[in-house]
Image (cartoon, rainbow over all chains, first blue to last red; front, side, top):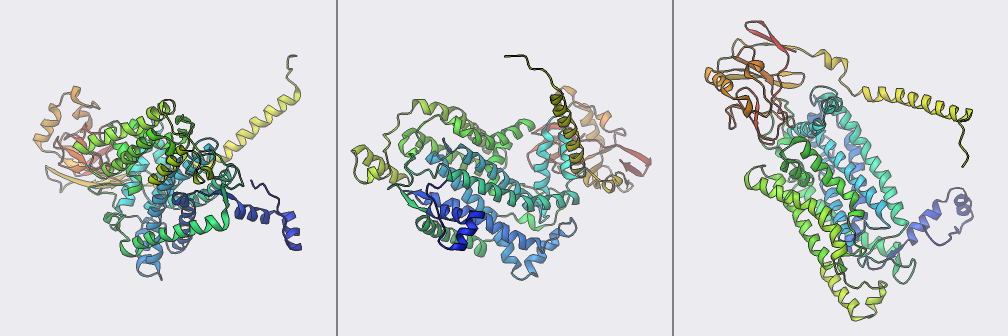
Length: 420
Length: 169
């Protein structure tokens, strides 16, 4: 943690701090030496914390008005929308907040992929992050079921049925998850409980995520280890606080745009029809943030293998620190990786697009190619690239290229700029 | 290295762990089992349906255990089509006779065996059912013919109480 000793000024502060060193923690967080070249892609950690708190606060308020019962849930959500004071606002913030949360987390993850933030010594931060991401998907899915509309019901049916692909015990697990022979009231009440629980689990993991971050300190766009504190660092407060705050403000403008101008554009109209176990909507699609994985699920013609492929697509990320064999962190100094990185970005976007389209004809073919490429990127390209790639020279410190070191380093800096 | 002798203390440790594990297991099990279907859910296990108004070529859908059940009075052509299929062409080979005891009446769970959607009646490449979620095609006997579903649509336990009433479950 922090390298410096801290002594509170006041007598009471000293008395308290000797018994519970909260002031030492606060001092560590304020003075925390941060690389001075962090760009705006690094502000999404703070933005994500904001998203989590927004979801928790609006969620608590919604829970005061929502009724978790199959006969009343749908009406209670409409009651929130029409009768509860500012209920529409709180619900729209919560519903769009989920999308904003995923938007931010995807940027956060892809920033990590570009700058190699998952590499040694930050593997544990990365893995905690993947667990948080999995919990976010669980929370989002469970929350989407609560309004008890058609998409809620059939989304719940399809997703829980994924477990029926498990040989022998699959059907038993699905019945256990449902608490019945179909998605029904027992399912709704337990989903509500778990939806309430998960954000607090995420909060706990976020604390671990930040704690693990503060051991080695932040990675940075150059991707080199730096001396802390040194001329390469600035204290977290006020420098990073202000920068994060500004980025958060920009993010909130986008957030507010969705909430106030197009609050339903990211949802599905079918979810304003109450759940009906006799009729499946013609076109079942998950929320946009799950589409790439949905495309992977559908691109495999076998039920069990499809489920395995979808789960592997997420879990493979946890193995990334060991699949990427390159010693160089930042893509700024990896000319080939940089190209494969953008191909991967395109691949995931394509998967998301075909995930929203019917699984037939050309769409299915594209989904299969894109699925294959996704796995090839992680399992073949990354391990080989570490050995084959000719990387660019890496500067010794963040300050060196700025103060005019060798011409190579200046070149690296121009490339760096171009990519940011 | 001298051979390690099993001591009285080792036995006590092992015995303590074993008793502890059993205790933890016995405590956790009720927490897990409470999520299984409860007595009130199980009590709704059977439904009686009046089928007197169902004409040939018509399907009715009833809810049984929260799931749709298709009751179709099949036409002669559909029965002939179902019987004509060779078992070799089936992903999940089942004879039509085994699925419809009375060939005129097909009673089955209207739940796609892929991921649980409700297939649409009289659709798809085999004149039976088509699941809109992920494109599984079923024939006039509800057998899977094309698409990701692994098995035929399930036949629940049912019997004719009299010529007009079917009891499901």
